[in-house]
Length: 93
Image (cartoon, rainbow, N blue to C red; front, side, top):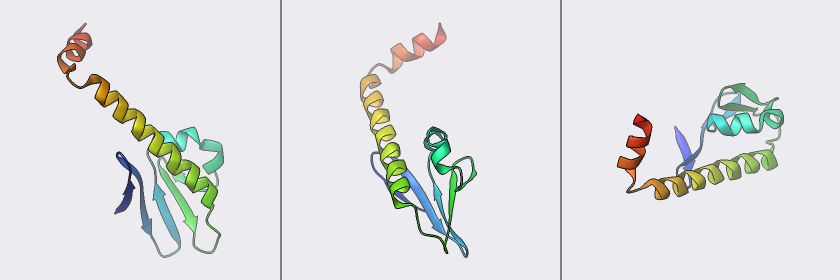
């Protein structure tokens, strides 16, 4: 399945006979629950019917939110790099 990536996976997508499927991280869908309600079909799937206009502004917001999440994950990874033993010790407490 094809996907866009920016500091990690942002969105997977696929084309079907009657719709386009976009697959975002579940947390992104949950954070935008009201906005995606009419397109939402499962935990992380949005379906856009081919005979309807794509909600480009909504898709842009979701992509930006996913990129922002990836950036935060990257910052966290940089922060903990070199401190794995400490984190493991904390986890054992």
